[in-house]
Every structure is written in C-alpha cells, then in structure tokens.
Amino acid sequence: MFGSINLLRRASTLAFVSTSRILPQSCQNQQLLYSTTTSSLQATQYLLRYDYVPDVLEKRGPYREGHLGLAKKLIEEGKCLSGGPTGEVGMEVPTGALFIFTDEASAKAFVEGDPYVSNGIVTGHSIEEWNVVVQKE
Image (cartoon, rainbow, N blue to C red; front, side):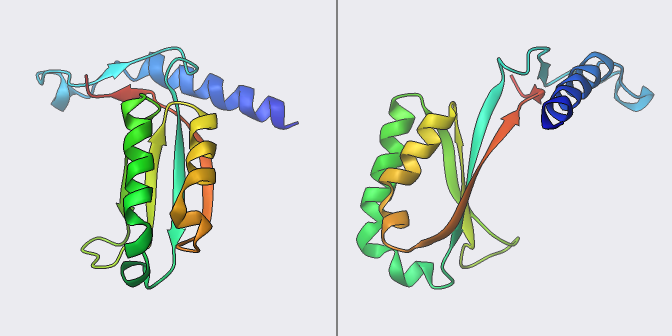
C-alpha cells in the first residue's frame, strides 16, 4: 500500500514540474530565476531536523566546537550542503536546527557523531527525504 502512495507522490511531483512552466500573466514578463528537473532521484536531498533542550545556549558551550567541526568536515566532503539553528521568527533561543545532506547515510553519520546528540543537547531528531523540484540556479 505504501509503495503505491510513494509512486503516486512521485507522479504528482512530475506532473507539477511539467505543468509549472506555465506562468500566470503577471509573471510572464519577469526573468525566470529557477530551474526545474524531471528526475526526482537526481534532486533528492535529506533534511535532518533537530529538537534542542530549552536551555541550549547555556549547555552547548563544551560541545559546540565538535558539533560545528563535524558539520564543516561534511561540508568540505560535499555531503552536507548547509545547516543552522531554527526557531520562531525573531527568536533569541533556537528550538532546534536544520541540516541539508546529499545522502541519507551522511545525515545518519552526522547524528551518530554529533556531540550535541551524545551529550543531551538534542532531544529528538528526524531525517526526511526532500525531492527538490525548483531551485535558483
């Protein structure tokens, strides 16, 4: 059953891509600043979401260098594209973080090696597949 849902989801994505090239009248005179792809596998990325403890700013200090060092290493290797804290608009204290990886194994390796996880700064995490359909070139 779930296989057919995934097939339907991918077919819907492809249908969106093929029809989204038709722009509303108000946008037809503007330069296109995005690209599209018809291969969802070619554009698949992985989102790693973290939930933080409420007092993250007070507790992260001893582990921050290792956390950022691991992220920078994966960026240098081309496995992590970006990452940073998340929270409500205008936040002073982040409630979590979001990282974008090129493959699921790298996202899992980051979680396994991250001192924020092993030292209780991260209270929960998830890894989601993200099929990029449009993006700025």
